Length: 164
Image 1 (cartoon, rainbow, N blue to C red):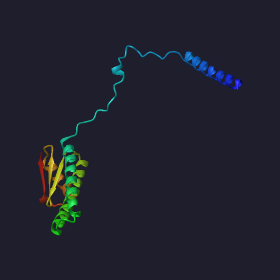
Image 2: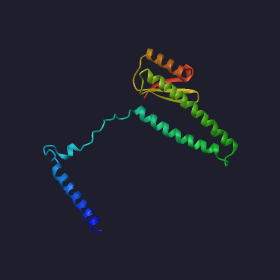
Image 3: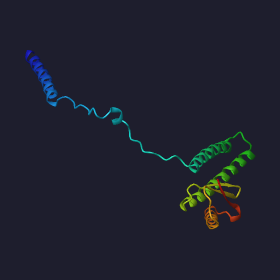
Image 4: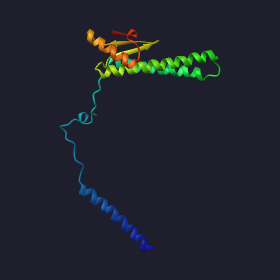
C-alpha cells in the first residue's frame, strides 16, 4: 500500500510542479494599450439602416390590418353559431379582399419595376386609385395608366391617378 501512496503523491507533486512551470513560462497577460479607452474599443459597429418611406410604412400597416380583417372573417366563416347568410357574406368579403390584394400587389409591382417605388395602390369595388409621390407629365400619366391597366386587368375608366 505504501508504494501506491508514494506513487500518487509523486504524481500529484509532478502535476502541481508542471502547472507551476507552465504558468511561469507563459508569462503575465499582456496589458491593454492605455491609449485606447475601453469604451471606444468595446463599441459594437452597427450597420446604418434607412428609415422606412411613407409608402413602406403604409404597406406594412395595410398588410397587418388586412391580416386582422382576414382572421376575423375566417372566424365567421368557420363558426357554427353564425347564420348561413352571415357566413356567405364573410366568404364573399374574403374573396373580394383577396382579389383587391392581388390587383394592388400586381399594380404596385409593375409601378416599382418602372421606377415608381413610392407609389401606392388602393383597389375597391372594381376600381383602383394610384397614389403617386411626385408630379408627372401627361405622357407619364398615359404610360402609368397603361401599366396599371395591364397589371390589374381593369379598364382605364376604373383607374385614377392622384398625388399623396
